[in-house]
Image 1 (cartoon, rainbow over the protein chains, first blue to last red):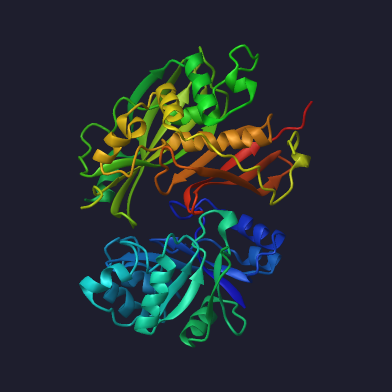
Image 2: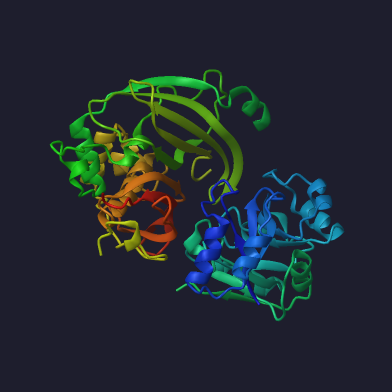
Length: 209
Length: 146
Length: 139
């Protein structure tokens, strides 16, 4: 099963994609993914229910978050009410240690995204703050990467022994599926996604040309 | 910076009103520079002569910020523009633009910590009919190199 | 193909790519007409003194390029909304491509949604956005 693990909708301040349009696009253009995860900036979209849309298009649509720490941006998979109470998702100065500990306590998985990016990527901060504890996975393919950002991410992942995921970081409809992650089995809900990430058996994919 | 307090004090309150006269030559130059080829934007003699829709994005408030809004240090730049058109903007028909602060938020990006201010200008014709809405997202970031 | 009515539009259709004129002369012409003739848009040296990589194409000019692309594709269309995010600077005298692709068609309201991008030579997206465009059936 292939999921795009990093997408934004109009719920994000800079997102311009409507979720139904993502679904139409994936099916009409035969984008080779089976679903996607909405990772809205600095928030968790608790209110939207995409289950009927998912059923209509036979796609897996899940929700997660992208939060901001001193090590850069971090995707958080497996957001629960308890996790939402553990730290302020809107804070742009979250200590990564706190995010990692809260994820561990509440069954979530933190994944630093676009780690090769200046300022908002983890690699830029490892020299100053050291290698963070509790990170097992980073995003090694990001659809919005420029220059050598993905290469820097992959080098860092290799050196530090991290596993890699892929996500498009789509903010408009036509950018979905540029990068994704392949899992060996089916995933139908957030708990199964978290379980699959923890099983550490997946492969980052890029479809960028 | 207490964003919530700033929102409470400044959001959704008009802080500027300007009247804009639209000049036909400016419309033509604006349109041609953008690469427009449709005569309704480039030919003042066309019966439906009007400004390209993005002309609405060019209007600037007289005051950049509401009175009493704290100065945020850094380099300010446009981070986005949105224009919604209900009716065409036509030379010779003055528009009144009323501006309010629509949103304030913080985020981090490739250039570091950033403050975003979203200004909304509502444009009205002389009959008081709303013609267009133009949103401007201004990002204030640390100066490059710092 | 020129689009004259909503039934001409195909989902996923790519608008003809448009190469904008980002020369300093043209940007000056635009900036003067728009009332935006600040040195950061009209003078490379002044822009560099501000810490910028060179004179900038104003964001509203990039938005204007995108609108022009839509009008070239569908000459009688009316843009109801155009919403653009300026992700990275667009620099004067450098080449860019202006692209659009149809991501939704609503036959009832006779509107289409279009994804918009301004890319540099390296294929990096500098500006992205969407437009809602009405393509009314001719009377």
